[in-house]
Length: 75
Image 1 (tube, rainbow, N blue to C red):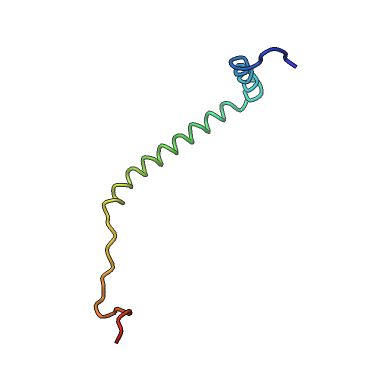
Image 2 (image 1 turned 180 degrees about the vertical axis):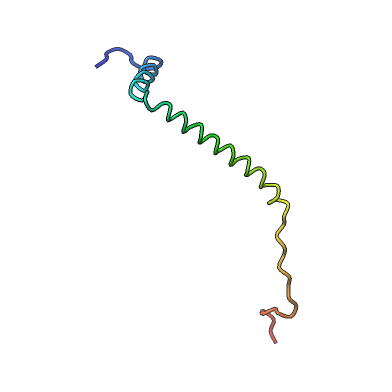
């Protein structure tokens, strides 16, 4: 249809032009949504880093062993 070599930079430029023509009205909404997503992601990463040291320093307490309750002992 196009004849010749349509690829590389030519194909990339053509793709960008088509996207700008058909998606131009939605680009501001897309950029806003991307910014909000990045903000939420960064906030969650900060919260995880703040919570992580507290979780690693607390060691689970070992269950106390009761003496004389060994069920495998034979009488």
